[in-house]
Image (cartoon, rainbow, N blue to C red):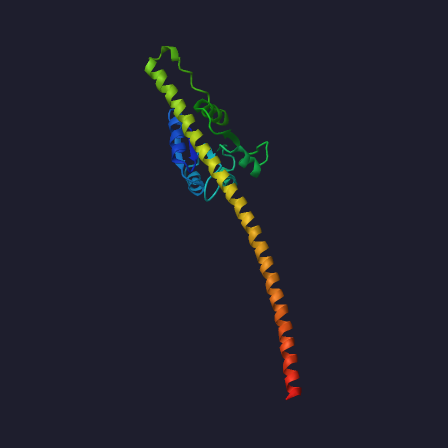
Length: 216
């Protein structure tokens, strides 16, 4: 029986490679670096399931999902949205989520595999009896899990830092816009006052000219 195909759409190459490594034993894995490439890849290969990152350039996860659902051949393809910023997802797509599943980063490898197996209705592989493995294999397995969590945790921290800095920058821009608006208003008042005074001076100069004519 041919292995099911999973398409991973994520702008982080580390996340793509990590997910591909997790799924390699059970699934054929395709990769795409953003929503546009992911859409083209999905239309070409018709994967059995799509893992879709939410925070991406060009097209975010929501926009990519909408584009996928417009394709007849992809309308019913299971989609699992991934994000370390659940609040950004719920800001665009209110819960409970409809039309896709969701997994929050960082996730353990076993949780991801279990969710994919459930979505594809694939029977899980028999668990390996760790007690029969050599100690080195157990250590490598634990290291792999820690590496998975580390990579996702690092990406999530970076995303949160970027979002925080963007929010701070946005607040500063708003404050600067407020200062600029106040300065603009003040300058307009000064110009109006200068204009009013110039008109007054012009009237006085005209009166003086009239007086000179009469005296001359």
